[in-house]
Every structure is written in structure tokens, then in C-alpha cells.
Amino acid sequence: MNRFGKLLLPLLLLLCVGVPAEDGPLLSEKTYKALNEVHELLGKEQYRQAISRLQSLLAKVEGNRYESAVVLQTLGYAYSGAGKYKEAAGAFDRSLALNALPEGVAHGLRYNAAQLHIYSGEYRKGLKHLTRWFRDEAKPPVESLVLAATAHYQLKQYKSASRYLQRAIRASRHPREGWYQMLLACRLQLKQYKSALKVVRTMVRRYPSRREYWTQLVALYQRNRQEGKALATLELMRTGGMLDSDERLRLARMYLYLDLPWLAGRHLRQSLASAALPATHENWFLLAQSWLQAREKPLAVEALEKAVEAGPPDGSTHALLGQLLVDLERWREAVPVLAEALRRGGLKHPALTRFLYGLALYHSGDPDQAVRELRLASNDKSLHDQAQWWLQYISDRRANAISEPGETEQKG
Picture 1 (cartoon, helix red, strand yellow):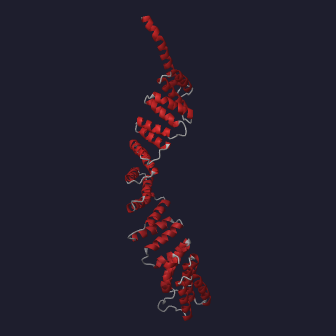
Picture 2 (spheres, one colour; picture 1 turned 120 degrees about the vertical axis):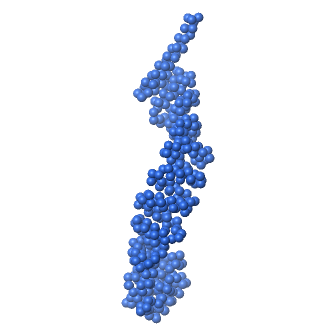
Picture 3 (spheres, rainbow, N blue to C red; picture 1 turned 90 degrees about the horizontal axis):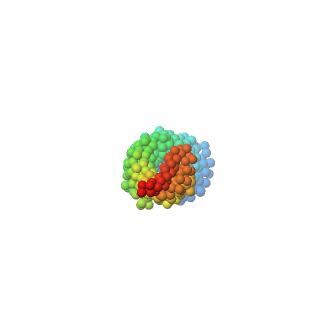
């Protein structure tokens, strides 16, 4: 017997053939005996035989509304025991439609019908029974509130689902985790981000080891433009060892967004050193950007050298590394890096890279090659004046170098 049937079957003797309300109708002896035989079959989980007997009995009691209602009720339980929930719900519907059962019995059957319809995915039918049942139930149990919430949620009626879930949570000493999850989903569907934030904060307090709730808390703080709290939450996750690689990157970007580049650099450097972040080109490049924003050029160079080793897709990383080496006047190191940038291509401003290459060549003692590169760079309008200045400067230095020995001889 399936779980749902096991829950319903014990109610049979109480609801199906129990003594009706005072002055209410009674079953005939023949029908009562037939139903008892059916109950024995149900107790042995012989559902097919029980269903067949009940269908035959239903034809025999036709015209007697009360007996028909009881037989249909029993048929519903038999179908339920067999796992045929739609058929069970249909039998309960027909039983209730006869309006012949005592109100107490009908009330309980109405709830069972609602359960079966909702369990079968017939949410509107289930809610119809459940709404009527709530009208007559002074203190509905928490489970019934969650049942209603589930049906409304499946129908995308998120406001109604939220109301029932809130009632269930307030009424329960130990609300279940799934109720909070559904309530959060409702808030998000309704774009009620402030309310969603309250739900997630509660979830984090109740289930502090669930990393996904911390992640949702960060996202909702960001959605509500509370970046400081988002950052604090990420730092708590880091302290608790909850950050995966994506969240480590999110923390770094949060530092950068809040203009804390040095903290971003320190965090990324530690994460890469410990292999908590994969040593990809993208991650090394982000570290370099962090150091650049923190005005730590030597550290940015170290990160870019690692990014270059990780295999960049084009020459842009080499170009940036070369530019930094030029800024630091590390000319000889800059020459091969800038040459490789030009060879790889894919540069946003190739003329600038060529111009820097020319400068590096000149300061490394190769003025002839420097002149060739600077002449090419001068074809770019934005660099023409600078390139021409350096070309003139190199020419003047060469002229001075030639004239200086003659002047010395004359003086001698």
C-alpha cells in the first residue's frame, strides 16, 4: 500500500460505516454487511477486488442517496489505496455531491478530497473543497494551511500562497524549512525584495550551515542596494569557509565596487595562492586590475606576468604588461613583451603599443629599430606629435654624438 493510502485507510471504519449523526440515516443490514466484506479486502490490500465489489454494490443501492454516498466514499478510499488518486477524488466528489452524508463525515471527506485533487495536480478542484472546508473549520491545522499554499503556488497565485504560508509559520512551533523556501520563492516571484530579504535573514538564522541561503542573502542585499551589508555577509562566509570560486570572485568585485582595491588584491592573491581560485588568465587579470586601482604597479606587473603565462587569447594582456614595464622604466623587460603583443594582435590601440615599443627599444640601446617603430606609430593622428618629438630627440642625440668628438679635437 502506498503512503497516501496508508494515511487514509484507517479512517474508513470511522467515516464510512460509522454510526451517523443522531436522527440521521442508517445503512441497511445488507449494505452494511457488504461494506464490511469490502473492508476486509481493503485490510488485505486487495484493492482490485474491493473496487469491483463496490462498483457492483453501487449499482444495487442506486436510488438511496445515503447508501450511494457511503459506497462512493468507500470506493474513493479503495482507489486511493490502489494509488489511483484522480479516481479516488472523483468518487469523493460524487459522494459529496449527493449531499447525504452527516455534516461531520462530509467535512472530513471534503478535506480528503482536497488532498487527493492537489496531490493529483488538480489544484483548482482541490482549492474549491479546501475553501469550503476552511469555512467550517474553527482551528485549521498547520498542514492544511501549507496544503492550500502549495495549491496556490502551483497555480502561480503567489499572494494567496504567501498568506497561507505566513499563517502556517506563525502557527507552528517548528516551521519546516520547505515552508520558508516556498515563501521566499513567492516573494521573489512578486518582486517583493525587501520582504524576501526578511525571509532569507530568518533562514540564515535558522539554518546557518546552508551556504545557499547566505548566497541568497548577499544577492538580496545587493538587490536592495545595501552593498555594505552584502560585503559584510560575504566576509562572514569567507571566515566560515563557505565561499566557492564564484563567491570569491563576487567578494573581490564587491571590494572593487566599494573602492577597496587593496582588499580585493589581497583577497584574490590569497585565493589564487591557496588554489581556492583556479589560476586562469581571467583571475590573474582581475588581480592585476585590483593592484592597478590600488596604485600598486609592481604587484600588478607580477599578476600580469602570471596572466600571460596562463595563455591570454590575444596580445592585449602583453600590451598592458608592456605599458606598465615602460611606466616603471624596466625597458629591457618591456621590449620582448611589447613585441609579442604586436605579434599576437587583437589590440585596442596597436599604434600606442608600437609607440611604447619604440621607446623601450631606444632606452634598451637599439635606436635604429626604435626609429622604425616610432615612424610607424607616427602615422596614427593621436600619437603623431609625440612620435615626431621622440624621432627628433633621437636624431638630435645622434647629431650630438657625432659632433662631440670633433669639438674635442679642436679643443685639443
